[in-house]
Length: 151
Image (tube, rainbow, N blue to C red; front, side):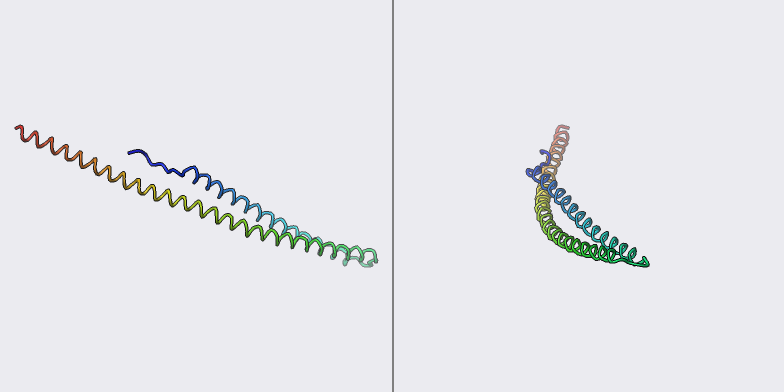
């Protein structure tokens, strides 16, 4: 019997590569979201540090208070911008997760098809092996009976 081969093996491999590619894209989106969140945390730390610095001074001037207020507005605007970008990234993550699920589903379908084909091939191999064993046994039996008859 010929060795097992799956006719759609190239498609299965291609689907496997697609799964890996979609995983990488999802990982990059998570990295992007993490970087945006880290940028927001950095802004919070910088603002807190600036406020501590200004408050620790004994005599504050109007210019320093004005600069602190401008910095607060800047941080607030940046945080709003980052929040929007994080939300957009979250939307893209959800879309990418769905794409990954779809590609995985297609890959698993091909894997199940390959498994069914392999099981059918294995049953055919077992049947062929049984038939050969039966023929060999019959041939041995005939050979032994001929020897017994010739004596």
